[in-house]
Amino acid sequence: MTSFLKDGRSRPVAIWLAGVTLLVFAMIVVGGTTRLTGSGLSITEWKPISGVLPPLSHAEWLKDFALYQATPQYREVNAGMTLGQFQSIFWWEWGHRLLGRLVGAAFAIPFIGFLLMRDMPARLIWRCSILLALGALQGLVGWWMVESGLENRVSVAPERLATHLGLALILYGALIWTAMEAWSGQARAHAARNGAWPAFSLVFLGMVFLQCLLGALAAGNQAGLIDNDWPLMNGDVFPADYAKASLWATLAHSQAATQFNHRMLAYAVVIAAVGVAGTGLNSQLLMGQSRGLALAVGIVAVFQALLGVVTLMTHVPLPLALGHQAGAAILLGLATALAWRVRRP
Figure 1 (spheres, rainbow, N blue to C red):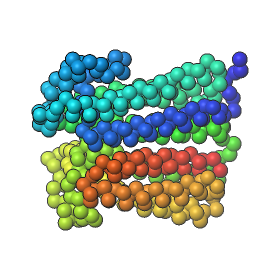
Figure 2 (spheres, rainbow, N blue to C red; figure 1 turned 135 degrees about the vertical axis):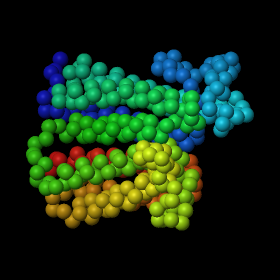
Figure 3 (cartoon, rainbow, N blue to C red; figure 1 turned 180 degrees about the vertical axis):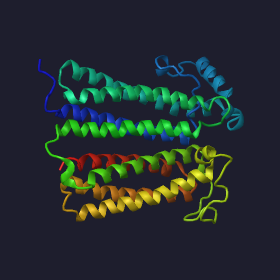
Figure 4 (tube, rainbow, N blue to C red; figure 1 turned 90 degrees about the vertical axis):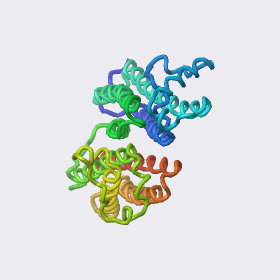
């Protein structure tokens, strides 16, 4: 039996982490579908083990439907829904939860196997352990989010939705970073050779992450269903109904404010991304993969902004909304890869 790898490199570990990253990406997209189809509150109980099985008889379906009929969402939004219509939203939420369990298994089982075979880079053991713990926490946060919509609301609380998505994106980005670490091994040079790029790339990554959170707040407030003109908002540069009774109510629960804030940061992200692309192509500090990632960041950011505008102006159709959420995750992934790459001259 070999000892834990000392040079910090393991291509099998990198491939495993990349595979889990793709599963998390799928989880983000399916989660968006669950929200957009109004399916997230269809399962009113949290059963981490037994919940892996869907209802297997007509009686079980009626029981779950009765639980849903007791929620404000059914009474105020879906009153009169048939059992068949309930089943159509149930399957989305059940699939989302099942995929979450599969992601956990796809991470935990190989991780234990790599540890037993002593084929895990020593410096990555603690990182993967943290990722495993964050994955478990994500399940709790998901239920905490759902719980907010079962008593006094017809949808989940926007701030809890943003927390749930934010944690998923942290896991997604950390998986990308750790996979690149496992593929390349221990750094052999200092990032100072790339000048200000390491610091600037982290600032840009933070901007993209914050923009994703603002998008979640806008989505949680269904802010895309109002002010569907562009570049103005209902004919105004600054929406008249921006402010609410308090700062928190404005930032987290105002439709106009959450859409306006999402728009404004989008402009900043696009400007920064185009700057990244242009500077990267002309910089003598960036070569090879770093230059390619800088160009990709600029292209994807511009496309993502255009898709956001079209999605808004067409009143958020499901395919475009899903594409916009997937595009946000892709941009975050590219920004993460760039931030890692520029530290490896």
